[in-house]
Length: 94
Image 1 (spheres, rainbow, N blue to C red):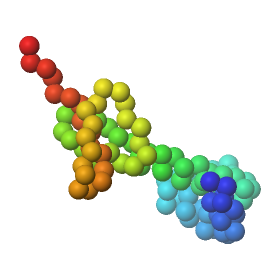
Image 2 (image 1 turned 120 degrees about the horizontal axis):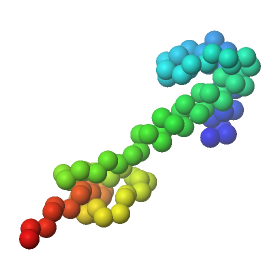
Image 3 (image 1 turned 90 degrees about the vertical axis):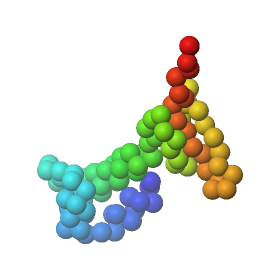
């Protein structure tokens, strides 16, 4: 994360504002270049965190690498593809 902030710090203010605008982040009130870097670093971290969520369903779904699964799911490993799949277990018939 710190390396990303260093790289962003090398950019110009106009570039940073354009990236924030493209990301849909308001930079109103940001008076210093460091504020823009902080806002963009935070926005990118949040976007990355949102990309790796798993929403369980009753259908088998591939589990993205590094995602923690909630308890109670059925999980299987696909030997051919080398990845995990998970789903909400079917309801037991009485």
